[in-house]
Length: 113
Image (tube, rainbow, N blue to C red):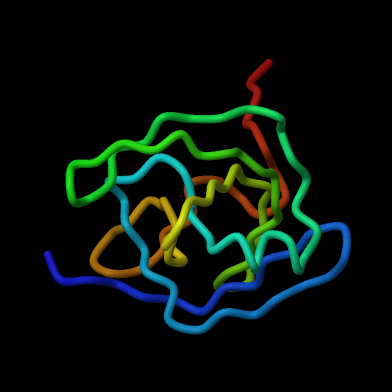
């Protein structure tokens, strides 16, 4: 599979940062961002750590943060992590190299009565 990239905005309590050429990787669970970006936008700490296996096979315990990610006219709160050398990577549903909406914009869940 070829790599897919997008432009994304990261929002936190202190502001917003636009990032170009963010890798979309559907095989990762968490979005990863460099610590500088998380601190610049004022990401909210979840006071949790996750054990991650990196591409080189090493493991790290990485802190978890909440941020708002906006891309392709949609935005949502997501969990992001960081570690030394972290690159901007979106963990996202990928279909033919494009981000595909999983539900209608503005709805977190689709409840049926």
